[in-house]
Length: 221
Image (cartoon, rainbow, N blue to C red; front, side, top):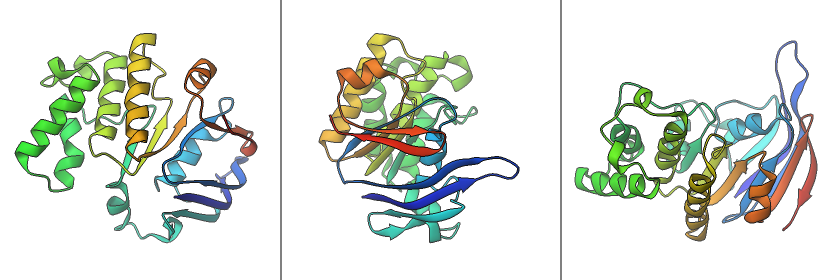
């Protein structure tokens, strides 16, 4: 499903964020990406969703070389991705409902189908009572749950999550992990960056470890 071949990402006047990364994530896998701050976890996720381009190397998704995609093709790629970034990237002038419904509208889904699906996923993350609120009216944890709902609403082929439980209390964290577990059981490939070793212990999956931009570990549960 996801293959990286000798991928390096460097920035001007800085050391390499990633160096010579080669790995494969199979369809339907649930993989943790861990390592200290600055190890390159967020950069790797951004490369997979084409938010950034590698300096060297190739990235294939479902056999397609996404490093060669033109700018116009990237939005079509992302229609099959669910993405949860640390800074949420919610649209502040749109309500919770409108934020979560946006990916479905891009796909051209019918209005009744959109409404039903959005309400369902907001109920799953415990925010159905907030659907008319705007992001800035929500707590950080609530905003994070909206971002998770938006990622899951399209039943993505691939879900990329960067510390998706970082600002959540333990009970909500477990609820979110159960949602991810359910999505994975339905066939979604999940790559989740996390510092939470307790979470990895409670939900054991394959663990990829990055240190100083290099892949230092690949551990099966």
